[in-house]
Length: 296
Image (cartoon, rainbow, N blue to C red; front, side):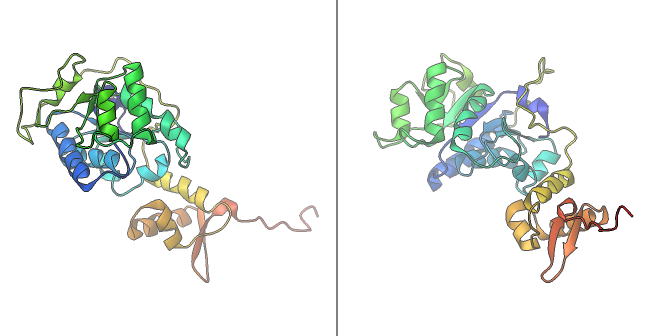
């Protein structure tokens, strides 16, 4: 969803556990910001934890990001945390699966290759050894050599990070550096050109895309958040009506926005309001009243 041009820019893939430590998440935020000021996109999976933190770190510095989601693309696109960046063209959200698909472990594993293949280099912040999407994606990347893989050092020699380094991943420099140097497949594990934690913004190189990357049909042109809302409303109330509070728990939008969109949907005849208690339902889900005398 949103800017296709971001898919052709490359950038830094940042991946990690959903259960990363506060220290790792703080590092991830700084890394995302550093990528932004150096003119590089952050590419990640959009999951809570490291993935989302890296993307928000870049977007918070007015950088760009690409989120390759394994589930719930429509819900993420209407989320308050992503919507402003989608509208200003700094974020692209895509998925190789149905935009309304729920979470499945197999899908999460399958989308890993898109994250690595769209990036010029990848950084693993925290990986659980022998388990989880981050671990399996990193091992798969090492096997196929899609992109240079850098691992944040971990003091525990039994950690997933330490094992990935033993299997061929390169140790991420402790000092802030020119991140573009990580793109070099022959680059040493120690970078001798440290930069300040937040460098001066660098103008990103731009060249017109020669090809368009196809990621199923989940990229939607002419983005209209109200239309996305209608699709979610139809899904959520197809079988039974829902209160505004029930809708809020599923839509991740503010109450004023929900109220405005519900009113618009009712004015357009897309939805109807039921009373006692107030509930809303997609109009086509209402049973039609057939007359016994229709043929007379």
